[in-house]
Image: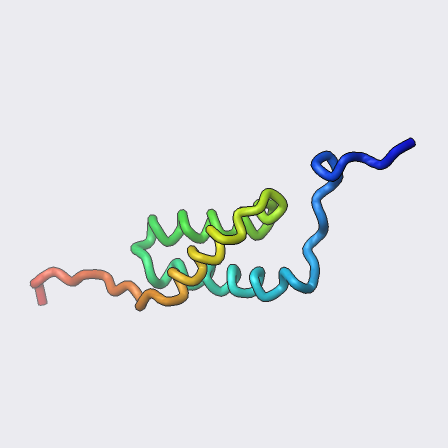
Length: 85
């Protein structure tokens, strides 16, 4: 019996080479709740979390790297205050 074609084989398991990307993604995931308003931060958190859990199997490394870099580069979000003191 011949082995399955490459496109039909099981996705590779995360390797040690993926570890820096996963760590950076985890940092960005938690930081997203500090740099965006709460509803947006929660959506970004879930998107990164989903990609780290399962999405890496489908690729998208360049998009995830850009998202993580953007989140880690942004300053913390400060809730606007009203003029009432």
